[in-house]
Length: 146
Image 1 (spheres, rainbow, N blue to C red):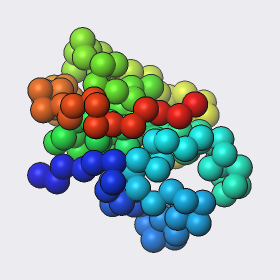
Image 2: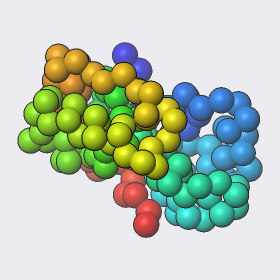
Image 3: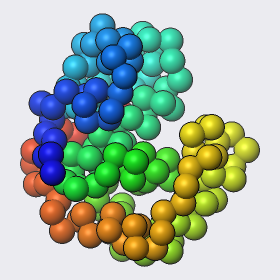
């Protein structure tokens, strides 16, 4: 299992392609820490992209750094339902997560990737919650910029 940290390459952490990685690097975002420290609106404006996408990436990166063992696709789904930290994940149940993902998939303005997402099994969702046990110390994570 890879243990990502704020100095890890953002493209590796988020499994971004070389073109997207290059675009992010052109605005100074090379590491996961760079992404978490930067303003998503500023990045989006400079790259002429949807700020919601940059916020999604930031949530995914924060989850991946905080919860070692959390699969990237799980981080993507959790971020899509508004979970950006272990604290927000704590106290949820697998069935609650599945219900929230299912509801997000049915919303009118859902991105294509989410509307076609495969719902996790209760066991899979439970495994995401157990990643809280291996949580990275919060002091190592940069705060999310507004």
